[in-house]
Length: 91
Image 1 (cartoon, one colour):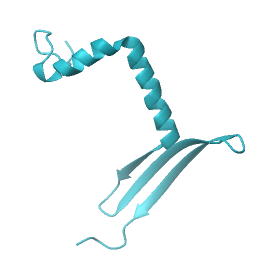
Image 2: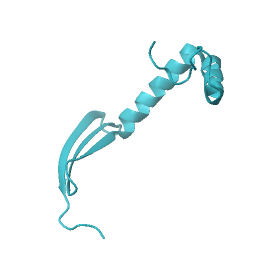
Image 3: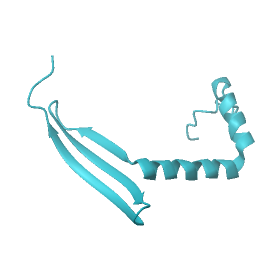
Image 4: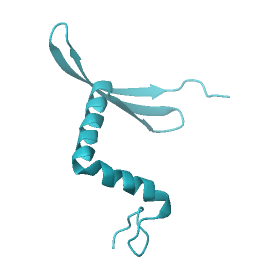
């Protein structure tokens, strides 16, 4: 059996997850799907950046954002990759 952190060995909901389970049951699959769509829309409007350290002084950054210009009707995506090098070490 795969590990599922909300459930104990007997398949019951752990006490600390009881409020979460109650919320999921009250929200229903339709509500969960709406929340997922809202989260996707926020992610696409705002964008996201991942930073990956290579060494103590070097890192790579990957960025994505989606936007729209309502005044001119433009719809665009931006992607970015950057390399960062720290010339001076911190205190």
